[in-house]
Image (cartoon, rainbow, N blue to C red; front, side, top):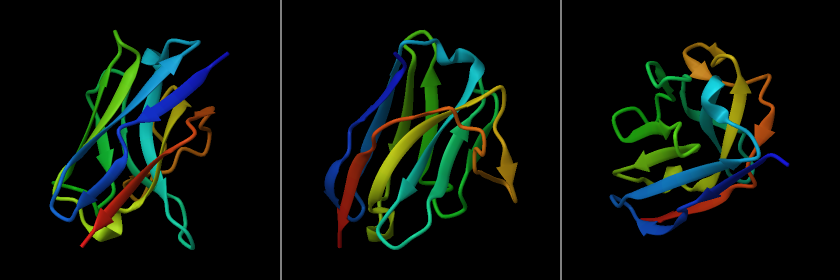
Length: 128
């Protein structure tokens, strides 16, 4: 049974940092593009960041460039998202997802139309 399990969410003040993790089990994710989406009530889901299989290429939403860093450890089957300088508008449920073969982007943003696995999400709250 394949599972993606996120952790690391929480409540921080604006300007603070969080590090999200996504642990994959039941399969080896080294051949997948991995990334993070977020969604808050009343807003469309947004592709936040994605990383290609070997980590050679990354994609970031304009809203998080320079503040968030995505990374992966294929040996540990784990994906990370380091989030710095958090803003209230970053508050959302964050989900990790796996897209086979490559990272599909549109206008420079990852949107993963063929994502095959999703995590259950971890909540990030940012207070001003």
